[in-house]
Image 1 (spheres, rainbow, N blue to C red):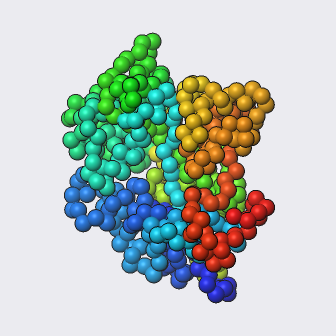
Image 2 (cartoon, rainbow, N blue to C red):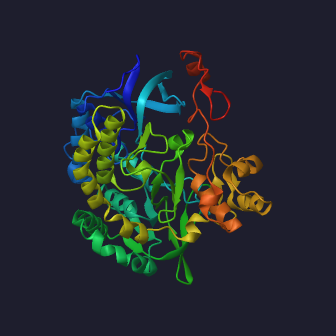
Image 3 (cartoon, rainbow, N blue to C red):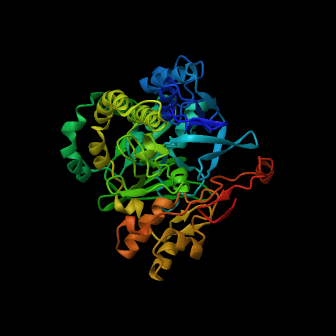
Length: 476
């Protein structure tokens, strides 16, 4: 192994979801010093959130995936990896100094290799009325259910597309919520488009078994399903009161107290963008993803991206991603040679291919329609700065060709999330307005700090928080 510098950690893993836990456990088993930093108070990530609670009913309520999450958490804690919970990464400097905020105190971890396992975020789907109180992401409702056993009161409608829509609807209905309808964009055209991917998808029968179980639950609870919708809007005086959906050539109104929206998930791009890793536009998924090789190695050879942050594949594929990235990191750091890497990765690469076999079918079936990713002029796109889709199109007509230039004209993306919510939508709007591919438009230039950090915490950092940022030519 190459010589370590005092104070360095061999591998820092950002994120403790399936990919992060698997990466940390495998890297530690190969003799590397590993530190895991994660925003949550316990490992698990979104898909395995709350699995460490001493609740034996978790399996029956949320499925075998949660039981698998417990196994991953146990393996992580049994390893030599150090886990730092409740820790938010707000910068990574060019020397792989990872700046972390925990309990109001900022500190730095120096890494020899970095594995980014920050997972996915729900795709933002701006539509008229989506900012009304009572409208929220389906994933947020799932978090409330899993962490606090909290369900929405009154009439609940779920709208959009994607497997999570059906999962959350069935979970809420089983938990006692009054789910009156699931309104989906998916229709006959989508089923036809997805048909070529079905034979490969059938190689993963567990995926279909879970989906059928969700559908049976919805039927058992009398939940209406409306497919192939062509428009979506929410209306109400002060909060959502009704949902308007276009079905064929007619409009339908549904009374509602809570509207939960979901249109799939996309890789969380912020940390990888902050480090200036190369990205490409994935037209199949309508999202950006970092450019990585088969081992998860990014355009910076010292940085790997694993799990859904590198491309949506699901929890089991993310596990294999994490383990592969850890083995490759051990090779990069000189702990194992190329032959050992090949031997250890071979079964994992086969396993990953098996888990990903369903993705072409799922991606085609649940591809968001154009009207959902290219919202009408009146829809607010940037909630931080209250910027509409029409304002973005108006600056596009002036010759604006990228999100960073649009930010200067409209302040879109200038809020605390730095475009995490609106970034993909803005790329799509600008690309369609200019008649070019999204890849030609690009994405926001993310700058440190990645999240708001108290000045007092920065001032107490060693060096007074004066972190030279070669990406922007200044100090943070």
